[in-house]
Length: 288
Image 1 (cartoon, rainbow, N blue to C red):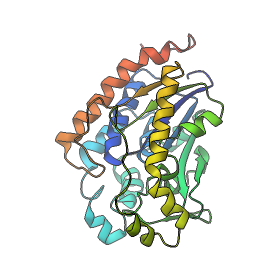
Image 2 (image 1 turned 45 degrees about the vertical axis):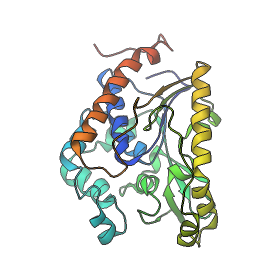
Image 3 (image 1 turned 90 degrees about the vertical axis):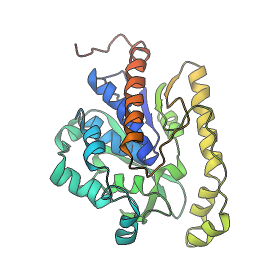
Image 4 (image 1 turned 135 degrees about the vertical axis):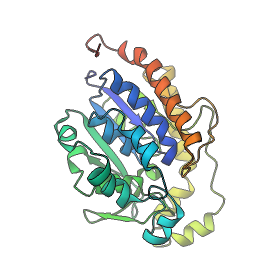
């Protein structure tokens, strides 16, 4: 376990987050674990296999189960969400690909899953122990606006954590951490642009005006948080791992010929970043 104050910060990005899966696989190769992990959207899904210590699980999920059941417009028509959350968080761990909840629950890592409150547009954070049998907190965190239904959980109406906290660095800072390993799913120099359909968005979420406003201004939040991450890295307080070239993989891509190289890039980036992370402490014992 890395020393207290070391945080792992995970962006989302749908299928793009298989880059993150590769990074976390590299960490698992050496038994590297963080005392604090915070993620939103697909970053949460990747963290579940990481905390449960299941090497190779996310790659198996990629190779065997990233099909129309996982993501596709058929899901949108049948279930109201382009991602098949009943399949991802129901059938996969329950029938196809074991997920070790016991190891997850025994882990000493503090794990925060971010979602967005549709009425206030504020970020809500669910602790590790709040993950119920239906994975409700994870589902809420991953529920992409327009392409997924609002998740009702604990009396709240929730959507993708990446709306309120695209990169959850500010929450990690406020929790007192001092060094951050930040895994992004966009290349360096990427800048998010404003949305071009504000009126349609405002009408679609007319019952949730604050949510609509947060979506309209999300590019500002994203670019501000990227700038903060980069400033922390310049100060020696962070290490950013991210794809080096513009991605050919979209949020809902299913083409393994495009996704697998992204996973491999993340795996190599994670391996290269290990020594920089390890140098932060002399108390880390790696597997031989």
